[in-house]
Image (cartoon, rainbow, N blue to C red):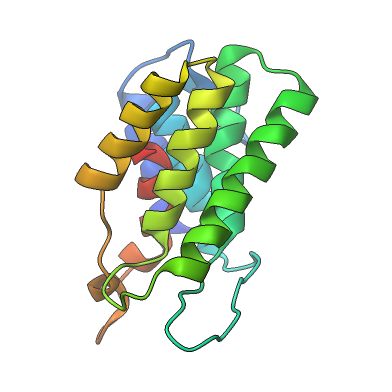
Length: 172
């Protein structure tokens, strides 16, 4: 999705925010803030819809794209100088959280990107070496303030459909 218009616009927006020691915009040599790198990279990866799909199709359960967690966590791993093992452990943790929420969520009102936000908050907290209480606070802030409603995929689907996962990564 690197060359698609929304992704290019997000890269330009990140560039306008000035250089940073946060994380790299993939496909470039430009570094930006950690949250912007998570947003741009997750959106770019998601834009072409070539990601995985978790769909149990059990009555009342949710489905989604757990791979949406990878790019934001890669930005965090770069920022904290995590090892490859630490990065992979964070991805597995985020996948497990995402999938367990899918299995237990019975609301048709939440977009699955919300699950990614919660999973990314927990896995980011682990990568940053936060203590259990701090992790709980991070997850609470992500779950409370950054809910993405299913409305983004209803009726006329806008470009927000592709950006929702990136925003969830940024929020997480």
